[in-house]
Image (tube, rainbow, N blue to C red; front, side):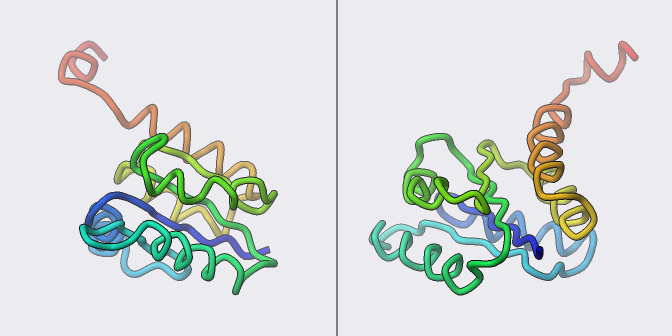
Length: 132
């Protein structure tokens, strides 16, 4: 089953992450960004994402969101009840890069676990690096 990668955020963070990932690895298929921009109604934002998911009801969706319980996250709560939709919060560039590169190669559950793990392990400090 095909896996789609959806990046959702406040403002332009989602589109910036996708654009930056494209600079590094080239444009990836089925990787889309949805940013809740100022002045956009939450219901309109939610409907846009839900329509994208409905149009591809037989596909999987790994959703990477910027903030737990933020408006973009909250707009997807109903969709999260579906078995083919998995959401990870705290999106960062390493998560996007790894998920985009692996989405067509790993089983869906493994991809979801990988996204969480990469999000955690990609955060480090100078002290951590120098102590290795």
